[in-house]
Image (cartoon, rainbow, N blue to C red):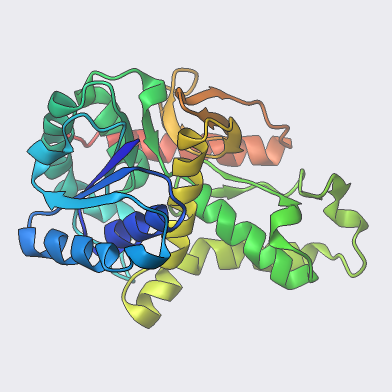
Length: 300
């Protein structure tokens, strides 16, 4: 398994390091517009090999990604704390389109895994310019938001986050939709927990929506939770586990790339699963889809 990273900034390097700790690839290649950055991150990971799963850790340019099974694209201009992700659209669209075309030229059989923001629009763009089938162009989508959702629910109710089934769907952005009606803990409805109150759920949903901006304001960027979330997707692909994750893929029903619970395995992502929603949640998802479509329409 060869996984290559286009972009070795904070998130790219953290995902590569986490992937190496999990033993997800026999070969990991880091690239960056600043070649010394890629080299430094590769050396830093390599120097821990005495205590980690064994892999070839390399750095180079995009030609060195040739023959990759998975290409992770994190390149782009990072988001500031006080700006919506979509403001990155004009800055990142041209860059990402060029990188995707070049990456697929060298690795025509790869799965593209998009992490660059605005995530939904960049996934749509990658699908449009790559020539790959929709199942092979995957955005991290609301996997990260879902991780935050489950973690905050766990903290609120004093339970293990890994036992929680709860999803955030729609846009990885301001119109994300935390689904409340179907939250369960090991099959038990959340409403059955001692101390349950709807106001607490409302607070958690609000916290999830502002989570990214809060961390960015405090430390300059989100790194660890994105890396863990990204590697959950990578692990599902590498191990062909058919795990259900709310990744972002082009959805023909909605006519745009959007995050919904989806089977993820070695084939890529699909099919999308039908998750029960209330009328209110369906309306919120439709609003979220419309928001993504409006931004996609602005692509050059």
